[in-house]
Length: 123
Image (cartoon, rainbow, N blue to C red; front, side):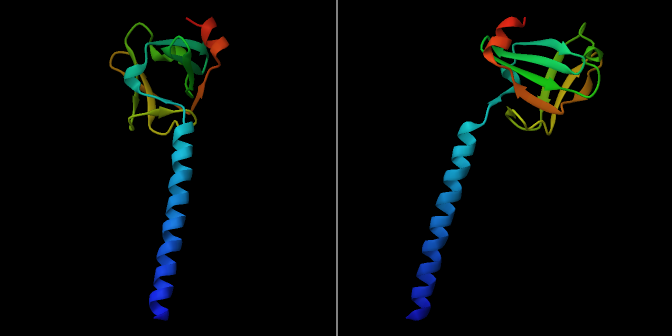
């Protein structure tokens, strides 16, 4: 009987812990700021190591690369690729900008969302 009571208490505690961690991860997931590579509508140079990405008039992001952003060879197609479906602020792992002919990868080291007033001033 005591064994059954201890087992029931352990199962109840385990259920509570998993519900709390699921709720915490759901709250974190809802606050993530992400976009898909196919949602990108345009690119621009912000500075020597930063490329602007336009998703919509109110959604723009700054992507930092270690190489000079002008090395992307803007005369050819520029694209963004990711190993995941979504590209998120603060999570550049597996995200690259490709430019040139043949396309050359430039690893993204940082992603941040630009404020709306900054986004309105860009191209």
